[in-house]
Length: 353
Ligand code: NAD
Image (tube, rainbow, N blue to C red; front, side, top):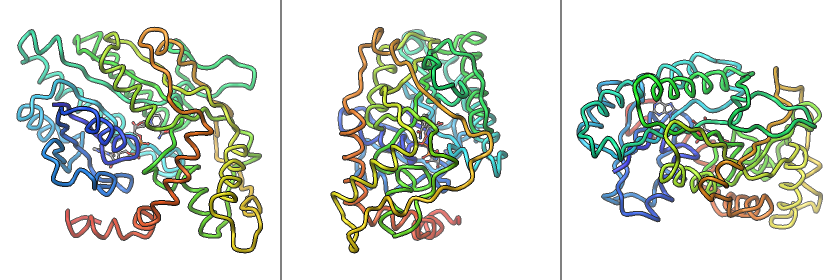
């Protein structure tokens, strides 16, 4: 049994689906179902006794302690977070609450649980914290990629809150001996990505005939990884990572935002041409840049390859094609998460809006 937090979000739900496709080991999935959490991502698991969904907050110590005592997981994987940089600029409070206070409370509950485990269970137990390359700050165009020893220099409330949680995780290893692992991954893309992030937003707006907004000059560089490759890296680190270590995860796919948007437009031109025969590129609109926008992220994932033999299965070309095809094949999912229908459904089932 493993306990996954944030398993109804983009990466967490992909992870849970992958895990249960490859293993008989059950998953307890704790998620607060914020705007970014979506049970529809997990619809194929309905009725599967290996998946136990629990609606709740990682900061709810009582609930987390009860889940740990009841299910006795051999690992806790922390995906739960507020994850959108723009939202962190306009409202940092939720990021402090979940990413820092929530992670702290989760760590405390896990520490207490771990302390009471028998020695053999202690040896097998792991706490894996899922984090981001954004904690390292921004690179100049000729800087080498971030390694695990790069200095932490977060620039947004989002990355600062993730940096704080990474430090807490590290401290719980060094101070209390908690068997922790941390992964710092580059930008993910793939199925079930909420359409506020660049790739799903561009696909969604393009098909809806809306402008395709690009911040500043569009020359910001991001290092992209297909979400299933992130999931396989997390599984590998959980399996064989050295305790207390951090592992960078990335696909060596540095692209400017403009290149990404051009690729998406060209792929949509091929797979779903516009009725008027024009290219989707005509919908591109440049908008003023985000404050403190990091110029370049690039991840050096050599340690993960060398120590644990992990390499990504997808190139950017193959992963982006799968992604575009997924969004074309799943318009109902996009419609539900953007129209508010899902939030209404949630309100009915959980008494929330
Ligand atoms: P997401 O926003 O899609 O999903 C986050 C999930 O956490 C949602 O299901 C949400 O309901 C849940 N959640 C939020 N607050 C919670 C709380 N207090 N208690 C319980 N659940 C809560 O995010 P994502 O893109 O899937 O990212 C998952 C993790 O991976 C995050 O920790 C993020 O920092 C990290 N990460 C993301 C990327 C990326 O490109 N998306 C890259 C590297 C690392």
